[in-house]
Length: 525
Image (cartoon, rainbow, N blue to C red; front, side, top):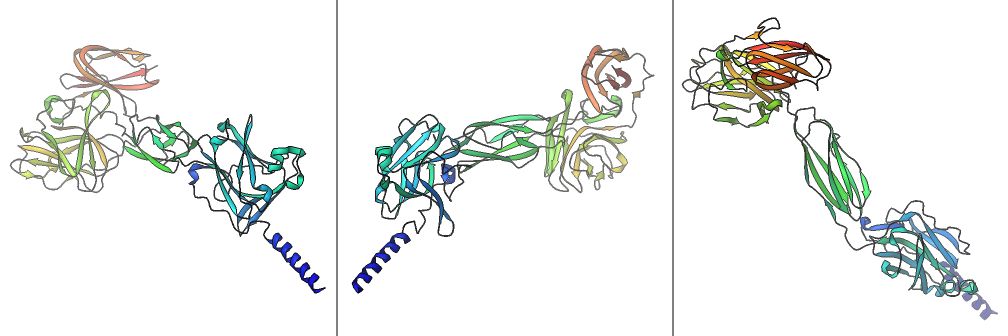
């Protein structure tokens, strides 16, 4: 009796032992392939294809359970498996992958030969792989090339079978159907996909809304982001090669601006620097002083009275050339700190300004509102302090006439330089029409100088100009004083195209060769 009891206890213990070890006690090896090189079907290590069905009804006798190993590791259990499919949540293009990875655990000797099938939208291919049956994990990395004939661009299912069903089908013995556990089912490649872009820098020249494109080349997925809201990518994410359009909003600030576009793909980051050039202002108002009353330093309207040898940087002021509409030359001045200064130098031909009464300048400030002037002479050095241009309005032309008495110095008979400074702020401003004058102007109103005519007074597409002397140029402005159009004439008669103007009332300033400026009014139909 005692022997029988011992025997029964021994059998019971053995049964308990088998039951206790009938499923994995430890997790499968943690995957180490970077996510950028993986298309995952089932794994805690990656983002899996959404809406995948792990137990589609194919008429199988297999049972399915999702178990947890340890605290968090999810594992698939297929028991009494004749065959079993996995239906992907969507068709997958795995052509850029090289392997199908599976972690398989079983203690079933009938599972030593394990058939695995890859299925695509039109057919399937099954191969067999050996796995350990001693209750340890077998990691399979099956080359996709073994699934001969597979169309890898339309993979949509996997199928697992017991070898008994694979060989004999329904005629086989159901006692040989197997129990397996699966984890970490994913496609992967050991080839690191490269990420290239067609350019690393782009310049957007147009001030209005404009687009530029660049190409992304990668075998994997990518994302695109801009750090500035004024530059918008046409796509923010995708897979494979693509052409992305960057749309730049109109640059109304009159300043250059820069955006960084970041492309992340296949584990690699690329950046593109996009610069949108500054918007150039419309030309400054046309000066009205008679040429005989002017000694010009810098202006398209007058003959220079001096030879400017350089626009000199006194201290950290960058001075560059710019061209306004109709070819008018201008200067753009950029400072980086309060006190930055510089200006035109004409030391080789000093100017006698003693007969002048004012210094005229037009400035268009974009990001500095505090601008001052100083005169420098050969015999008396610099004028005392800086003379402020006063309260300025941003993003429009400010015409300032500074009395020469404001520049405190002994005499102004040999002026060699005019200096500009940003006194309390820094940034950018444009400059034009820098000249000395006597203060007298020669602006004629619409009722004077009848020898200058424009007709008809209401025009649909063209205006005719006629004068008894040569006209240098005409400038058309709206009722707000904003310059709309500027045309070089250099003759006594001209037909002027106004077809592009909106309907409304306009002024025309007509600059004669003698320096006189005549105003006329017309209506655009």
